[in-house]
Structure formats: structure tokens, C-alpha cells
Length: 605
Image 1 (tube, helix red, strand yellow):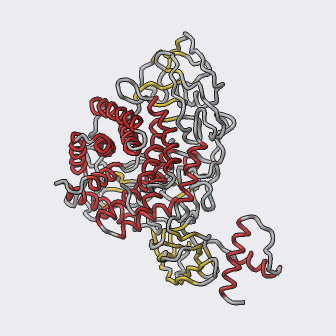
Image 2 (image 1 turned 30 degrees about the horizontal axis):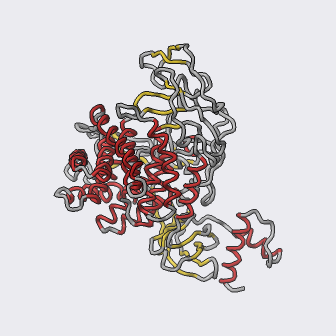
Image 3 (image 1 turned 45 degrees about the vertical axis):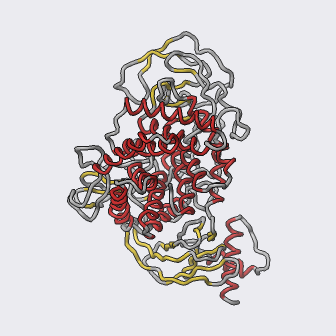
């Protein structure tokens, strides 16, 4: 039997086995037994695939080296051969190979000795099938009078104000975190991510995307108060943890006149307050949401306004007015000295300028950009000049800025400024800052592991993982304490910035590093686990919050899990069934969707 025929049959065997087939037509029992015995799906790749002309990577968990072949699954022919180089990295030792995706679309797999990979696709637009699933994910998570939500219509009685017991219509939006909660700070990333997809993939399912955006935005606009700020949530922790995380009877009821005294959940030092006890309806936390979310509300409304300006100017005007009111309140009442807040404010100001044409917002964005550059470490600061370009947490400290799920906003802000105002006198400084962060910080640490995964951040002092750069230590995962989550949001956000940095700086290595972040999410990681439901293989076990409400959130194709987490030694863990890794958080979905679109557009803004 020829090698091509063996390759073809090996591929057929893998497909049948993954589908649960018990026998393979056209093969003798001995041949089937041989294929079943020898099929070792141990070669790690992105389990979805790659855009044509991009660089792919494969790895084998061993220190044997050797060669690999890229095989066309339809023909069995070898499309490319390469060498596996032994690399000892932060996540143990692997034999790693690099291949060019080439210009011939098709389905391929990698074979290295008796080991092989799952099949993956090389096409012009490999990510569209995932984006379609993500769109359907949002439709399945709809709350309110939807016909697509998994248990709709639901929560038609949202909600009762915590401060005065009156009903206020805050229906719509999406459930979050494998719960029934509607956290503004988290779910606003759904609008931002989908709006970015609509802009980067102009014309692709535009009406469908905008329909989903408007469904989510109905809730956010309803959560804005007359003063301009946005309230925190409905369905979350009101009188005690998880008390509004439940189904309701969909009938608007009176809260009654009974006042109860509570301590705000999660803050035992906070003063007690009197609130109206809810009946069946869920409680609206009427306090202003955090600073990140206020500026993200501005970003979201300004993005939507620009997307709707031609087709629905009245709606665009409403979104613009909401953005401007929230911007004014937030700039007056919240500080932007922290790097994360400053970056988010700069992103909001750029979009407000785009929506309104008011040059004052451009001036605001530029000033915020200058503040970010003052917070950025340069070659003359720190004990180790080989790692530079990260941001201080705030002025007057050498503590490094770290972000779990808000999206590396200082990095993205510099990218947005350089992309939006290329002729501005500060443009060269913005590009220098982008280069320092991408090539001086992300890239050197990403080279320390076999997968090109970027770090979560730097820590002062020593760490159990024992990884140091100068006077800092670095980690890829959050420390596993009482509360922690996986890496998908900050990994995807880094990829978004790297896409734009590669375009602005014309550095292909940064685009390859952006691709590595998507690879990690889709299975090119030490656990060989995809963390997008319905895409790839070996997903962490589903998280079910069955103690809080019934029926629980189902398994939803297109859901992006929190992502792989780490142990105290900063080594990856699956966390089957853990909320830390397997919950569906909107920031993870929003940033992953944005990165998928950015990789095909080869730029993110």
C-alpha cells in the first residue's frame, strides 16, 4: 500500500473515530485494528486552522526532535516537510516545527512519525465559521422577549431599583458567566467585540451583527441614569450573593414598602444601607458601575453610532448623546491616573471624536496618550533593560500594570491613536511606545515558552514559578486564590494589539505572535485543549451552576470559556467543571471575536 494511501486511510480513520464510528467501509478488520492501534493524535496545532500565507506551528510533547510533514487530507500528498526543533521552555520541553500555510486552501494535518494532529483548515477566511458560532452564542444568551434565548421569554419583569423600590424597564441584553446575571462591566464587551467585527469585516453578515448589537445595547441604554453614569447590574448580587441569579415569573410586581438593612455584598467594611426588599422581580444595583465600564459604555455607544450613522441616523444620534453624557460624568467623577483607566479613556475619546467630529475629544485622546507614555517603562528604567515597555500601574510607582479581562487598554490605546491620527506630531512617539511594549515586553517573554503565549503581567519580588526578569517576576496565569479566571481575554486582547502593531510597524514577526494567541485559545497549548465550545477537541469539562437556578445554562456552541488556568507554580491546568476555566464570560467572547476578525484583516482598528 502506498504512503499516500496510508495517509488517506489514517485521515479517514481519525474522522470516523472522532465521530464515534465503529467500523470503516473499505478496510479489512486487520487494517482497522492497525489504524486504531497506531493513531496517536499527539501533534499539537491550532485545531481550527490558519489563513493562507500565514505561519503555522506544530509541537510534539517530547525531546526527540525529528521531522514532520504537512499532509493534504484529501489527496494524502505531502505539501511541506520541516524539522522539529527541541525547545525547553516555561511549560516543559517540546519538539516544535514551523510551516507556511501556503496559498492552496484545503484540509491538512501534521504527521510526525506515528504521531499526527487533528485535521485543520487552510482557507482565505478560516475564522468565519467560528464567528458565525459566536453570533449564535449571543443570540442564545439573549435575555428578555427574545425568540432565540435558550429559555426565552425570560426576565420580562427586570427590574426593581435598589434605591427606591420602583420598577424600571431594563429588559434585553445578554446573560453572562454561565449565569442569569447581566453585569454591565462584563457584557458591554459583547457590543465592543461585535462592533469591531462589523467594522473589520465590512459587509459580512452586517445586518445580523447589528441586530445582535442593538439587542444588547437596549439594556445598556436603559441602565444609563439622567446624570449620565451607568448603573452596575441587574440579576447579580443585590441583598446577598447570587440572590437575583434566578428565573422569575415574568410579571412586573411591586416591591412592597418593607425596608431591610443590609451591608453591600462583597464589602464587609461598607456602611449599612436601607433598601426595599424585592418580591419576585430582580433587583437593579443602582450604584454607578466601575470606571472601566463607564468608559467602555462610551466606547460602545460611539462605535455603534458610527456603524449606524448612514442607515439609522436617529439611533446613531441617541447613542452619541448617551456617550457624551457618560463621558462628561466620568471625567468629572472618576480618576484616570491608573494605566488601565487612562487607556480605556483614550480608547473612548478616539471613538467619540469619530462619532461627533468634535476636535475636543481628539485633544482629550492625545493628552491621555501622553499620560500613558509617561507611565511606560523605557530602556533607562528598571534593573533589566532587556525587558522594557510595560506600563506602571500609576504615577509614582514601579508596580507593573496587569489586566485580567479588560483588554490591555494602554497598549490598545496607543495602537488606536497611531491608527486614527497617523499625521499627528505625536504619532512617532505612539509608534515607539507600541514597539517597546510589543517587541520589548511581550515578544521576549513569549519566546520563553514553546507556544508563543504572552505573559499576564509582571510582579514585584519573587514568585513560586521562579521566573524572573530583573527585579520582577512574571506569570502567564493568575495566582489561584479565592477568585481567579483563565487567560482567554488578556491573551486575545494582546493578539488584537499585536495585529495592529504588526501593521503599523511593518513587522511580520508580531503578526505571527498575534496568530499564536489565537492558536493557544484553539488548542495549540500544552493541554491540547480548545476552549471555544463546538470548535476543536479536548475542551475542559462544562461548568454547571445547578445550585443557583434550574434549568442551568446549556452547553452553547461558540461560547468562549474563561480559558486555561494555572497552578501556584504557574503551570497550565484544565479545571474541568470549574468556573475559573469553563464559565462563559462575555469579555472572553468579545475579545476573541475581535481577534478572529483582526487576523483576517491583518490589522485591528
